[in-house]
Every structure is written in structure tokens, then in C-alpha cells.
Image 1: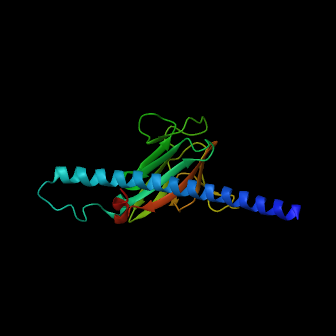
Image 2: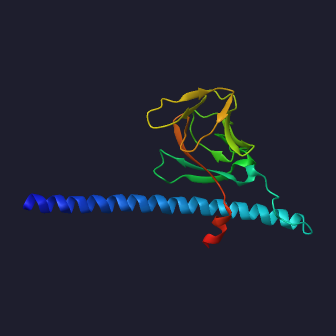
Length: 180
């Protein structure tokens, strides 16, 4: 009887822990999608201000609605970024021209570039000294890019030197604007 009660309590505690993890994931997703909606909204506003006499319908391309959420896996959730892939995202150690700066001595000044073409995200290694490793799936050892590009998929991991970046790729949909 006591063992049965202990099992029920353990199951309840486990269920609460799973619910906490799931709710944290959902709130994280809501935050980065909300940030992307704000970026997209700002792009539309900027276009409207520069072209006051034209309709803002369909002015942004498919590349402008493609976003990437980058989370540094080794920083315990402290470093999270949202970028519009249509704007080209440079990653490297240099502080001048990169959108994402990694303070890792094994990362080149300009290491790699994430860009969009025809609504698809790509990553291009900018002939970095140590290369760019793309890891797909839990058990994939990854493959090295060196001066070449490949399609970037949702849930890929990018390994640059000692840094590991987890990737989520998503499109901004019209329903994101209705969340507020």
C-alpha cells in the first residue's frame, strides 16, 4: 500500500515537471515569435513611411517573413536571438560587421553567414579557419562546411569552435499580429 502511494506521488511530481518544461517551451516560443512579429511589423512600417502613397500589401518577399531563432546551447538560455533571414545574418568574432558576435577564440572574425533565397534558409561558411559544423538530429555527428553553403533546417545545431548554436526556423504568419 505504501509503495503504491509513493508511486502515485512520484508520478504526480513527474507529470508536474513535464508540464513545467512544456509551459516553459511554449512561453519561449511565444517570446521569439512575438519578437519576430515586431521585427516584421517594423519592416512594414518603415516601407509604408518611405512609400506613403502605395499599398503595403505584399511588399515584403518570402525571404522577409523567414526568421531564425538562435540559442547558444552552452550559455544556459542567457543568449537568445531572433533575426530576419532576409536581412543576412553574419556570425563571427569581429565586433564591426557581425549581427551575432561570439567571443570564442576558435571562431573567425567573419565566420559564417545565414541568408535566405526563395523562402529557404541557407548557411554559408566564409572560408573560416576552423570550419562550420552542421549537426542534424540527436545522433548525427554533423558535417563540415568549409567555404560552401547548405540548406539550414529547423532544429539544426551549428558548431563554431567551442560554441554550439541551436536553430529554429519559422515564418511570420498573419495570425502572429493578432496575439496582442
